[in-house]
Structure formats: C-alpha cells, structure tokens
Image (cartoon, rainbow, N blue to C red; front, side, top):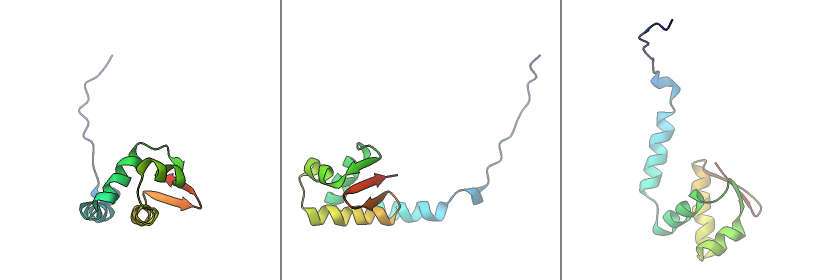
Length: 88
C-alpha cells in the first residue's frame, strides 16, 4: 500500500554559497566582448583542452585570451597548467 505522505523539504540558505554566487554574477556583468567570446567557446569545450587549440578556434590575440582566462581562473571556472586548460 502506498500512503500519501505530505513531505516538506527544508531548504537552508546557509548551505548555499550565495556570497560567491553574487560576486561571480557581478564579475560576469563586467566582461568585455572578447571575454564573452572566450566564455561562449569554453561552454562548448571538453573539461580538459589545450589553450593553443582554444586560441585557434577564437582567432584572437594571445594576450587577450590569457587575460580572459585569468579572469575566469579568479572565479574558479578554469585552471591553467602549462598549455592545458581545465574547465570546471
């Protein structure tokens, strides 16, 4: 027999890193057009890719790419190890 039990899910706001989420959203509002292009390309990349391959796909300046990747590294989206990029 199945009993109809009304269950109330309790949500604790303390479990959600809202301060980090707000900070990340503020950073996203300040992205340049190049950083937006890099972010869009990152969404379609596997979780591990070569930075040189990413540079070829974007056809952008190397310094602009590294600047964008540094921005995304600060918010925890990417981790750079040499020419390998890990996307979280």
